[in-house]
Picture 1 (cartoon, one colour):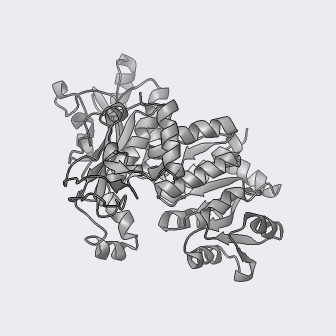
Picture 2: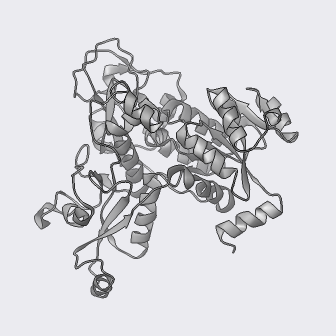
Picture 3: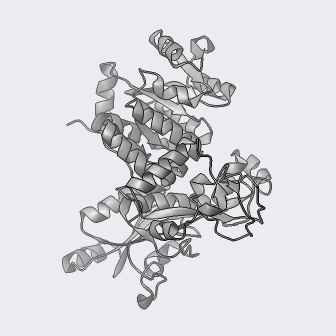
Amino acid sequence: MLNLPDKLSEMEKKEEIIKVAVVGVGQMGAGVATLISRIKGMDVLAIADIDREKAIGIFEEMGVSKDKIFLSDDPDECCRALSRGMRVVTMDARAIPHIDSIDILVEATGIPSVGAEVAFEAIMAKKHIVMMNVETDVTVGPILAELAKNSGVIYTVGAGDEPGAIKELYDFARSVEFKIIAAGKGKNNPLNREATPDTLRETALKKGVNPRMLTEFVDGSKTMIEMAAVANATGLIPDIRGMHGPRCELSELSSIFSLKENGGILNQEGVVDYALGRIAPGVFVIVTTDNKRLKKDLEYMSMGKGPNYLLYRPYHLTSVEIPFSVARAVIYKEPTLVCRGRPVAEVITVAKRDLSSGKKIDGIGMFDVYGSIERASIAREENLLPLGLAEGAVLKEDVKKGEYIRLDQVELDEKSILVSLRKLQDKILPPE
């Protein structure tokens, strides 16, 4: 069997190109699209974005002349344009799954409702889908994975972001029969639960990123979302609500993430967590073993005396690694990261400020709420609102700053595919 680069080169020679569509060309989606255009054996033929000019600009950056870019929101027109050798730009993400010649979609909007609709339509159209939209995955990923399995296609969270990078270390650790103590990431930004797009606007503009995206990082929601995705893919659980998030150095990880009786912070083993300090942009898995020979070998290879050992990857390359999830899904029919069945973790909704009855919640990375991780079974028992369902929900009573919002305190959009999928998931895949 050829390795993946050789396989892609062979496909390029045979003109058996993986035909990719990208939904959402913000910072991450744009990086994916331009990189895929440079990789043998695959190409981006269609882009969906609400900013049509931005999407056109991405194709031009890829070397496509403007007269070869076809603009339409009609799937049939898009199909005909692709058959003439054109590239397609649409403002309607729902059109992309219905373009017959597309093999696989990359969803990169970061908006739960959009991600759910695009993923569902793709699966129904029997197309593979790679989710950069982890926000959607932690909300309805389990049911989407089940629907994809029944349709004979691959649904997967992509490589490159922290969840996929952690899963690589986790799979290695399990393969050699290590016992997993903890798996986690270094948080990239300082933690400020009160961050908003207004307070971070100047910083975001300097960094060239969307203020809403930066807010999701800084207020901690993104970390909670990413580690919930890891939990649901591995069965590891949050040790406490919100995780511990200690500030520490790399050299301290294996001792801090150990049981309390051993001088650490954990109440139990087999958990997800994160660390503040000079750990980012790396990810880690803390392991142990009772095997005397393995312990001796680990000490010889400068891994320390134990009992805990650190497996550390010092980088994650986000959009740079996504093409390999695309290739694995299409060629080998393998996901990178997917919920293993019923969810074990949930991201719940916390009021960022006092909210009044009748208020329509503005969503992730905005002014009203942030996320915190919890055991899925506890979140269900306490009837807590999943963060992915918060945007557009209307409060039926006042909620104070810092309070956890319950499902019975809000009115959801019953016409939303996201809400419908979540109800189906809760019915047939209840939390473990």
